[in-house]
Image 1: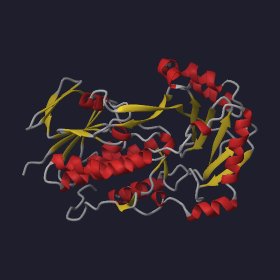
Image 2: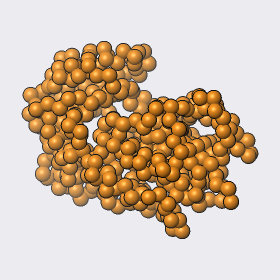
Image 3: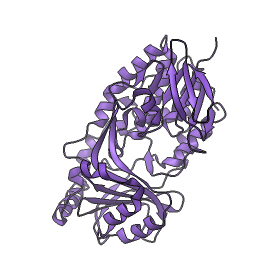
Image 4: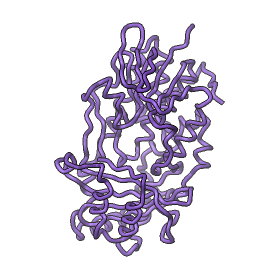
Length: 407
């Protein structure tokens, strides 16, 4: 029987994970990526809960552990760099997980795992799509045309492939928060602790260690939707410098780093919500389909789980239509639960006044206290543990009867 040909747009996390499992199940897979090579760099992410189980099944768990950032926990600090609360990695409420890794390191691991068995096409992207009962027809920006059985968008929150498939129907829900990421020189004040600093005027700065001798910085601030719509993100440096002015703590250091940096990611924080994730022979996965926003800490988990389930259902169902339907049936309740934010988030974490900052730091101190940590450990979320539960249901096992053929 002729192998089904699948084209995946995007070589970040969801795309290569999907490619791994599709190839394992006998599909012929191509990944197209508009960048000239895999995109390294980025901020710290974690691979835990059901994502860790999938990484173990893929044989990459040890490689992820070996690339650990070394972060031992998160400290809340004040403008004098005095620690107001500490959340060690092993604590029940820690933001730091056991498998912390720089995003680019995970991308590299996934690329190395798949590159000998998946066709990667860099420096190109999909420009036109069409389909009928027989095939999907793809025109690339390079002018090349090819037929595939299926096309999957896995090219992130600003997915151009998604727009070709669905138009503007999937909605980006802006959460009133802007964020910037950059890599900066390490200084003597940096350690193996992540440091979280809350400033007045609804600003927050975060410095995190990596395993490359540098520091990963994040600059965050609240901004109304009206102001966000008027932002000229091409002037991101001037916008960030304005927000850093007078923030205290290490804001002056960050301002100098912003001025000299040539690699700053800056965007609004939001979620992608789509009424459906497939149409005909086209589908989407990961942030392109259901970005939960970085503040949930679950973007990598959804990318792994969504890709694993999509591949498994396409392999186990009698046709792609039923495979897409089952994928959405299994994933949508989980996605909706992850995207549901607590009331007041993120606004409550970004106080306007100095008094509000003191309240936030006081609450953080209470949360970090021994008695609260002991109580929290009893009710800790199993999704971040070694258990492979998907909101109360076992992660589906598609591997029975299949022998993975990636080394």
